[in-house]
Amino acid sequence: MKDQTISTEQEIIRLLKKKSRSYLSGQTLSKSFGLSRTAIWKHINAIKEMGYFIEASPAKGYRLNLDNLPFNAFEISSNLKTSFIGKDISFYKDTGSTNDAARAFAIKGAREGFAVVADSQTKGKGRLGRSWESPAGVNIYTSIVLRPSIMPLFAPQLTLVSAVAVAEAISKYSQKTPEVKWPNDILINSKKVAGILTEMNSETDRINFVIIGIGVNINMTRKMFPEELRPIATSLKEEIGKEISRIDFIQTLYLNLETWYKRYLKHGFEPIRRAWTGYFTMAGRVVKVRQMDKAIVGVAMGIDDNGELLLREKSGNITRIISGDVEI
Ligand code: BTN
Image 1 (cartoon, rainbow, N blue to C red):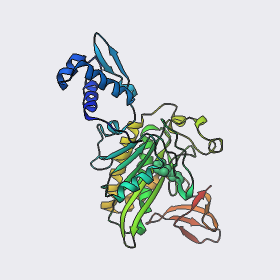
Image 2 (cartoon, rainbow, N blue to C red; image 1 turned 180 degrees about the horizontal axis):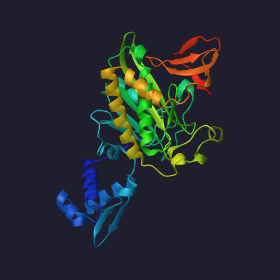
Image 3 (cartoon, rainbow, N blue to C red; image 1 turned 60 degrees about the vertical axis):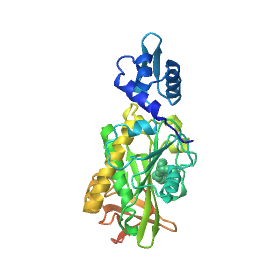
Image 4 (cartoon, protein in one colour; image 1 turned 45 degrees about the vertical axis):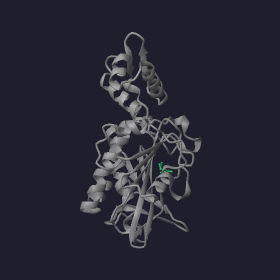
């Protein structure tokens, strides 16, 4: 279901936010909007339906609880510091996959930076045909449309651009520095906290659009993970011991993504390679890379100028890995 916010309600929310320390009287509101007190009261009820907590006192009026704002497009857009990422948002309480929704918008011409956000997904997709746990009310599921003027063969670098943006956002909240696992996992304490699914629509030598799908486990509790994921997956809340505002996190994420993406378009992959390497703690460790038809074992050495994983095999040969799944 698409979340539809109505501008009178948004205006009332804005006024309530300004006055959040004291009450805003029904009379002031009805004067400001030229509406009856009953009409205002109906709008207040609609705002409550949207998930806002409003105290109503017959003598004093209305007061908004700022500590408990709902996760919706209006809140994500308020004070968002980006110039194009997340400037247009389509928000869903529930959707199949935000990547699929974003692709449909991109095909219809959504501009660069267009973002889909969902509170929950029924068919959250991971890499290599896996599924992505997407319960409601706790995490971030977002997909962003990009239209870079780069050759399709460089598109996988955008996963690493996004990984740096996600790792940097996590660092703002976590004392423990996150680690990246090539190509798309972000870990804390060796457990996966976020993943990126990059999908592309292109011609042989030209990208039409790329969808960057990002899932971050924010406030999910250990119990909410299926048992088989508990040893390998985690959430920010589990790691740092406190709830994090999803609104705050997604705003940070969009700003980081925009900054790193602009840097990439301007300066190429080198600054990304350096930043990514700073989060890559697996260098020097023996890993197994599973590919479609084989598995290669070797010592992970880092990434090359293109973002491909370098593996030193027992024979001493250095192999470049373009795609695969890394296991330690
Ligand atoms: C992975 O680690 O395998 C990638 C996980 C990507 C999950 C996100 S959640 C938002 C977006 N929509 C999806 O269906 N998948 C990505």
